[in-house]
Length: 413
Image (cartoon, rainbow, N blue to C red; front, side):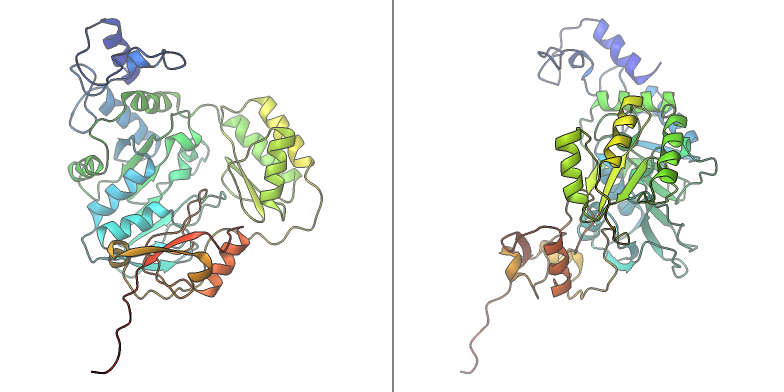
């Protein structure tokens, strides 16, 4: 019996509900269809964190097989929940972690909360010393699939944008010992759904416990049912997406030649302006745009009409000489006078961007999307950083959280 079937069976019993949630299975449209299924842990519905057998565990095993993993842990708090869980299970306070600089802000926040010390790397091919733990991003927001770092230590991967890859790539291999994938980004699952995978380098019991530490005690069973549906469907029919993606990459030389068929990154030279015009005039909405690029995310749930509209929209972008792809990641060393943990928990204050040069960041500044930190807590905000933000259309009045400076004391007696 699937998760959805267990929920439907409970709804069919027409019980008098003296349990959570407060709507008691009855809500007005447009929520009336899902309300009877919206329950938490009850007899017969399952228990995300504690059951050993049942519909949830069976579905996780199906999903683990898709991803060539030993274990799969369903998440209702997004990939962020999985990132926190796997880092907390694999490290101790004060540990050094090798981190790809284009990591999501969830990784940076985890470093601060768990008191971990980052060594930053470009998100290309890199080697880590023996026994060292590392976390990298694959695929990235633009559709690049970088190689797994070379190390005999644990490799963790933020594969939030890679939930579809096992259904698209014939040569798919696990990107790490532990990795997270966001089902809702490219599969047919509801928002906030994600999965943590493991090759059992770390015990399943510990990982399960850590997902509970960083997750709600009342996970949505509607979200779990949608994860189960994605596991059963195998992600949908990706052949249409692959064919369209390949055709567009061959036809339009402005599209980055990446291995990820779900991402079309178009280098136009005016990504923000072009994306705004496409939405207003053509009704085509992208996933993200930055100064030079527009990113479109595809899935089997896009219709042929969607694909035709996207192709027409790209043809309408005025011809211009685009720059070399300038992807939103920082490749230069930043001064780090404080650890992420110390800066994150220090007294802080907000200052306008114009007054932020030389100050120590108290938290990550990571515009969404893509959520890649321009600077992390503990890093000193320099002139080059401010120039990047200015190029991203931030004004001098944009507030920035910085570590509060102690007032200078008068000299002498």
